[in-house]
Image 1 (cartoon, rainbow, N blue to C red):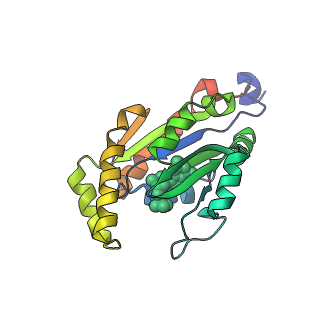
Image 2 (image 1 turned 135 degrees about the vertical axis):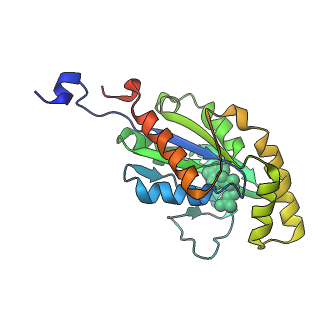
Length: 209
Ligand code: 5GP
């Protein structure tokens, strides 16, 4: 008799939906890329956005880059699990894409802002609510975030001030999340995120059937 027979866990379990939020400069993108590179069971939720691609970004890989009209059409058709305006652009997650992956038993990680996180938490679909694990990433102090953002040097002063204001507003929301990672260095952040993924996958309630 196999262990699965013994435990009665043969069959398919649903995937986990890891939702990651955090202000610009928290190291979110680097952490996400590393997790996706090293964890074969994790798939990226590709968002839609109306902003233009940055250098090195590919349509259908980093984002689905849409026109304003295309985005509005998807809103009208109720295609979004959540959507929000961030820094004057619109961003949204397609429901079907996420639900299909979860039903397929694979885990998904999404990088969305605090407004989108509110909407996902409020989602009534049991596939989403049972799967959701929300995580906030930030540096322990705002000066470090400001230093990291300044260090990028890619923005004019107005854009920088707008991003800093959004950052302050976002950090105030950290208590809404189940987990909060206080960013140290890339290695430490990755270790903490990995331990959350491992722990959540070991929950008896998630084991099939
Ligand atoms: P960026 O333009 O730098 O890639 O992303 C800007 C912000 O938009 C980030 O805080 C990111 O988390 C957020 N974002 C990216 N995709 C989505 C999405 O699908 N929904 C929401 N609500 N926010 C998103």
